[in-house]
Image 1 (tube, rainbow, N blue to C red):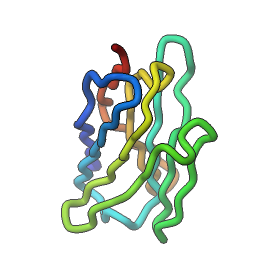
Image 2 (image 1 turned 45 degrees about the vertical axis):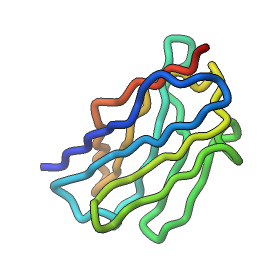
Image 3 (image 1 turned 45 degrees about the horizontal axis):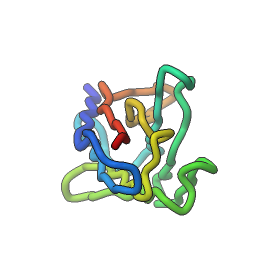
Length: 115
Protein backbone atom coordinates (compact mmCIF):
# COMPACT_ATOMS: atom_id res chain seq x y z
CA UNK A 1 0.00 0.00 0.00
CA UNK A 2 1.48 3.31 -1.12
CA UNK A 3 1.60 5.93 1.60
CA UNK A 4 2.89 9.50 1.41
CA UNK A 5 3.30 11.58 4.55
CA UNK A 6 4.18 15.27 4.34
CA UNK A 7 5.74 17.29 7.13
CA UNK A 8 7.64 20.50 7.71
CA UNK A 9 4.90 23.06 7.21
CA UNK A 10 4.34 25.97 9.54
CA UNK A 11 4.20 29.72 9.94
CA UNK A 12 7.03 31.71 8.35
CA UNK A 13 7.59 35.41 7.81
CA UNK A 14 7.76 36.89 4.31
CA UNK A 15 11.24 36.47 2.91
CA UNK A 16 11.86 33.41 5.02
CA UNK A 17 12.52 29.83 4.02
CA UNK A 18 11.09 26.43 4.83
CA UNK A 19 11.81 22.82 3.89
CA UNK A 20 9.02 20.33 3.37
CA UNK A 21 9.43 16.56 3.42
CA UNK A 22 7.35 13.76 1.97
CA UNK A 23 8.17 10.30 3.24
CA UNK A 24 7.08 7.51 0.91
CA UNK A 25 6.41 3.88 1.76
CA UNK A 26 4.89 0.90 -0.01
CA UNK A 27 6.58 1.71 -3.31
CA UNK A 28 9.96 1.61 -5.02
CA UNK A 29 10.99 5.13 -4.15
CA UNK A 30 12.75 6.92 -6.98
CA UNK A 31 11.27 4.71 -9.67
CA UNK A 32 8.34 7.00 -10.41
CA UNK A 33 7.68 10.63 -11.11
CA UNK A 34 6.76 12.71 -8.06
CA UNK A 35 5.41 16.21 -7.58
CA UNK A 36 4.75 18.89 -5.02
CA UNK A 37 1.40 20.64 -5.39
CA UNK A 38 -0.07 23.60 -3.57
CA UNK A 39 -3.71 24.49 -2.86
CA UNK A 40 -5.24 27.59 -1.32
CA UNK A 41 -8.78 28.96 -0.99
CA UNK A 42 -8.00 31.47 -3.73
CA UNK A 43 -6.40 29.03 -6.14
CA UNK A 44 -7.05 25.57 -7.42
CA UNK A 45 -4.50 22.90 -6.65
CA UNK A 46 -1.45 23.73 -8.77
CA UNK A 47 1.79 21.98 -9.54
CA UNK A 48 4.79 23.58 -7.86
CA UNK A 49 7.68 21.23 -8.61
CA UNK A 50 8.29 17.90 -10.30
CA UNK A 51 11.03 15.27 -10.15
CA UNK A 52 11.26 12.40 -12.61
CA UNK A 53 12.67 8.97 -11.91
CA UNK A 54 15.89 10.05 -13.62
CA UNK A 55 16.20 13.09 -11.39
CA UNK A 56 15.02 15.66 -13.88
CA UNK A 57 13.22 18.62 -12.37
CA UNK A 58 10.59 21.12 -13.45
CA UNK A 59 9.08 24.08 -11.61
CA UNK A 60 6.11 26.36 -11.93
CA UNK A 61 6.89 29.92 -12.97
CA UNK A 62 6.25 31.16 -9.43
CA UNK A 63 8.54 28.55 -7.89
CA UNK A 64 11.36 28.74 -10.41
CA UNK A 65 14.49 30.21 -8.87
CA UNK A 66 13.11 30.11 -5.31
CA UNK A 67 12.20 26.48 -4.70
CA UNK A 68 14.35 23.36 -4.99
CA UNK A 69 13.00 19.84 -5.20
CA UNK A 70 15.25 16.99 -4.15
CA UNK A 71 15.08 13.45 -2.84
CA UNK A 72 16.86 11.39 -0.23
CA UNK A 73 16.98 7.85 -1.57
CA UNK A 74 18.23 6.41 1.72
CA UNK A 75 15.21 7.80 3.56
CA UNK A 76 12.68 7.44 0.71
CA UNK A 77 11.89 11.12 1.15
CA UNK A 78 11.03 13.83 -1.35
CA UNK A 79 11.92 17.34 -0.21
CA UNK A 80 11.00 20.86 -1.20
CA UNK A 81 13.25 23.69 -0.10
CA UNK A 82 11.42 27.01 -0.37
CA UNK A 83 13.07 30.40 -0.05
CA UNK A 84 12.10 34.06 -0.46
CA UNK A 85 8.59 33.12 0.58
CA UNK A 86 5.71 35.53 0.04
CA UNK A 87 2.09 35.48 1.27
CA UNK A 88 1.14 34.12 -2.17
CA UNK A 89 2.98 30.92 -1.24
CA UNK A 90 0.48 30.26 1.55
CA UNK A 91 -1.45 27.05 1.15
CA UNK A 92 -1.58 23.35 1.79
CA UNK A 93 1.30 21.55 0.14
CA UNK A 94 0.81 18.01 -1.09
CA UNK A 95 3.14 15.48 -2.60
CA UNK A 96 1.91 13.17 -5.32
CA UNK A 97 3.30 10.05 -6.91
CA UNK A 98 2.12 8.44 -10.13
CA UNK A 99 2.44 4.65 -10.24
CA UNK A 100 1.01 2.55 -13.06
CA UNK A 101 -1.54 5.20 -14.05
CA UNK A 102 -2.66 5.68 -10.44
CA UNK A 103 -2.11 8.92 -8.53
CA UNK A 104 -1.29 8.77 -4.85
CA UNK A 105 -1.53 11.83 -2.62
CA UNK A 106 -0.39 12.63 0.87
CA UNK A 107 -2.59 14.37 3.43
CA UNK A 108 -0.85 17.72 2.97
CA UNK A 109 1.02 20.13 5.20
CA UNK A 110 -0.02 23.74 5.82
CA UNK A 111 2.36 26.56 4.98
CA UNK A 112 1.41 30.06 6.09
CA UNK A 113 3.52 33.05 5.09
CA UNK A 114 2.60 36.03 7.21
CA UNK A 115 4.14 38.73 9.35
